[in-house]
Every structure is written in structure tokens, then in C-alpha cells.
Length: 174
View 1: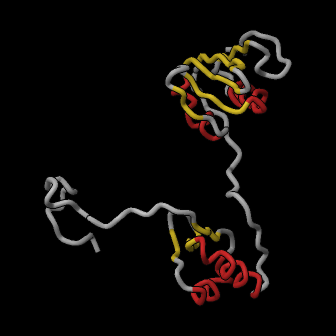
View 2: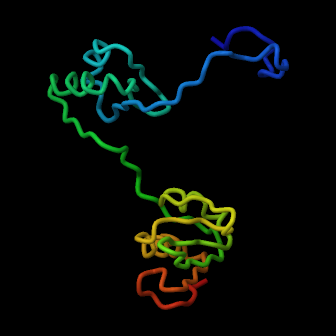
């Protein structure tokens, strides 16, 4: 289906004609990924879950966690629990960014042409800090930040305040 009638242009009807008056609930969930085909029937028996094509996995409400784990183990599936595993960040390609990586308190601050490497900084767990005008991330990642940014030879990365954990200040090729 393509939705439930309406004007077809979104919810621009004004306050009276809002698209939905249902409350929004944001909570934690259980995501089952990997080769879940072998446990599909067991997961359906648990109930309350749904296949999410975008996430390529089954999503269940948090209160079903124990049942989901038991259902998977019952059919011999290996169950790994914990936080979602993120893919290792990949280097930018020809970003041509001029960046400065410095220590800021107990963190690392990356300034310069950061929009060009936003994906990489985000993948490393960084977040934008408007007051500082740069990306901030845990200090323990200093060397990893510099190394990842320098993997793209078109980037010019300078360091200060020993942000790289022992690297000398200066540019990288380019």
C-alpha cells in the first residue's frame, strides 16, 4: 500500500489535520542479526517481533530479550549479546581536507575542513561541538583519529599538544 489516503503531500494541513495524534514511544529494543533464517520460525513463535529490511534483522521489544535469546539457543544458534558492533571506520577518499587535531582537556578536538570527513569523525564516535567549532571525541582515540585522517593522502593533518600520543607536529604529504 501507499499509505492511508489524505492529500498525498505530507502533513501540511495545519494543527487540525495532523497526520497522527498517537504518542511517540522511544525505547530500547532487541535486534537479531546474522544468519537468522534458521531461527525464523522460533522467533515468530516468541511473538511481538518483526523483520526489519533496513536493519537486516528481527526487532523485538526489550521485555522479550530473554525469550528471544532462549528461542535462538533452543535451535542451536550462537547468541552474542551486548552493544551493537559497529563496522570499522573507513578512510575518506580525496577529501582534500586541512585539519588540526589537538588535545582539549581529556578529549581530542578536530577542527578545520571537518565537513569533508564528517562520516569518518562520526564513525569514530565523535560529535560536533558548536562552541569549540569542531568535532570532539574521547582522548584515548587521539592516535586512531590522526591515523584514520592521514590514511587519505589528500588530507593535510597537523597535530598539537601531543594529540596523537607522541607524534611530532607537522603536515602529512599532499
